[in-house]
Image 1 (tube, helix red, strand yellow):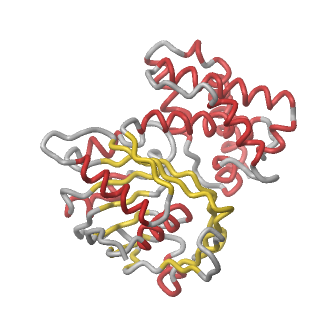
Image 2 (cartoon, one colour; image 1 turned 135 degrees about the vertical axis):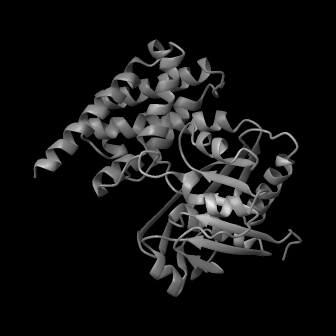
Length: 330
């Protein structure tokens, strides 16, 4: 067992991502974990969460939080780990986590979320809490309540401080969280430029999500097999990378090529997250994956850099509005 200090960890959104990463942090030892569960509450309360993975030898692997709750408690924590999707039009994450943050004035707020601008509402509401902006790279799903399936062995997190806070040792909070992730066996990168990595991931998410939906091909493999939409995805990725550069985030020169090769390696039938949400009738992360970065381009007169992506965004907004109108007629 390690000599890591004892930490009180609250995970808000204990779905596939939240369950897996919190399980590994728990495995680092010396912590108390509280998991906020919604649809899987009864299953997790009764049996914990089964983690089906080959990354840690033969199972069964079961994540058992010390406490399972339905709502965020007004208690003191060291880390408040938010794994909810960023859906500002549906719910307010600051409102959801407020009871714990207000009781934990020094807690690090860890945002394991996709997209651009996810930190802003947290910073506005809780300016004195360190915000640890994080990006997960892992293939996990929870198709059955209380059962998480991990595809392959890859598990990575990139974490960085959103902004320094005068009079607060936020860097120490960041390093401590990174150390717990590493000790839990997660490949961990602690960076001083997390926004650069957010834009790198957006190159894939921002392109593949709208192209998969608007092409009516749905799966990544189908898109890549169609020359027209392959080129559309490639062009869109190049445009997003160019916008990132124009906004002051230098992209690796091989990023787009690597992104296309990574896409080609995904299993047949793999669907981008917004496609899955659309099929399941769930809200999609339109705001943080598409609208926020495109709004940044508009505000800086940079839309000429992203003609394909800009049109895709407009077409997707129209498509979703028409789909919603048609569903209401049924």
